[in-house]
Image 1 (cartoon, each protein chain N blue to C red):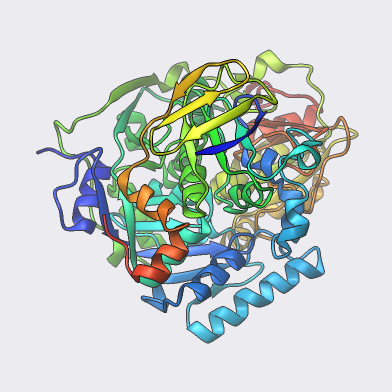
Image 2 (cartoon, chains in turn yellow, green; image 1 turned 180 degrees about the vertical axis):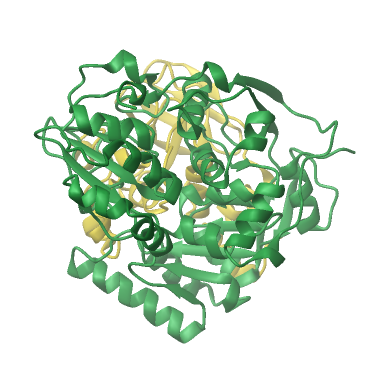
Length: 164
Length: 416
């Protein structure tokens, strides 16, 4: 069971909102890079986020670049899961590959600051602030196995190969 | 069972009868990274304990930050050069050009599976390669295992009939399509292009369209491999890499979208999303301070030719900076040979070295507060060109050139 606060964002949060190209010179200095997480969507996010919190988006979260730094800096901020109505393909795969759960559910009723409780195995999100309960879609089996090993590289370190 | 192009390629490379919705392990013919995603890939690869499956199918491109604007990016370049030297993988140096253009010119073959740590890897779909962007971890796995897992995408059949009007082309078509279906209209899907207008289209236009498939969320944008593809490969000295490839008649499509090319007009994406499209003529009066012609979307010889035809002997409007970025060294040489570069420089343009240029906002042409740019690139997200207080419009090379002359967004047919 995961619990934490929601940080609510709108539709179409791109990888440029999450970590803009103008900080490309910091990509080999991850602690510095992470100070700019989601800066162009909410300049105060980095000050407000606490370990265990959730990033809650609308539709097409993470569209754009293949930069794995995008989910990486969200994870480094202490975020324990991303919830969104829909997620761009590459971002979804990248987040799972870093061991960061991405849950597809209707996030309309979640407001900024709501306390959420997520049952990863049961597939439900409970908004403790307003009492609503949402269910999220199943993560494909191959991705679940990667997630359960903490990401793709830890998976390879352990198994040496990938299978479906 | 009849197969779509995506099903055909994934079946062949996975040794299975792959159909939409299946998850398969497939062999990868080419895996690459560039200088902003490569360092993370290299570190992950090194920590994984794997060795390169095939150094000749592993490529590193130094193209995003060239020449390096900072010490830290120069150090990232050193990391890629060192890895290339130690592992024996292929290195494409600063100044050679954008990864996607060089993959198209020199490596991609019809029917290949190509993965790149860059979302515009889809460009090679223009010649019938299943080419898709992945993150650093996934590409590291392709480096080490020579394979990865893929979900076989459902396919949208995009049927384009009719003839384009003068001044209208591939960029207008793909912007129109994205505007119509939305930035997530094809998420996880394969876009497969069919019809008379596609048969007649040259490779440059096919690459432009494939390049932007990802802007509708698609996993791949696939074109048939036909006579045009064969001639392109022959001209690049790679005639042996050709094979004909097309979808089977009767393949199952999730939906069919029909477009009459003759009805299209010059189209522009407005800030801050690619699907926020309008006709260029509807935006008349919108002032711009910068024009960028180039990138992996529209930095090929045909694109520069279209721009030069409009700009030759003229000057940009007062207060407009005109930036030209050829997609590769080969394109730059050809453009010099044709005289386009002389035309551009005479017209007052800034010529940048082959590479990504100002597209992603890390150097060479960042916008000031409140400024607007018309670019031939593929993204206009908030902050994309280095400043969240600026505005990016996307259009064709002809629209960009025409707009440079007037200082406002202009339908190129007005100046042709």
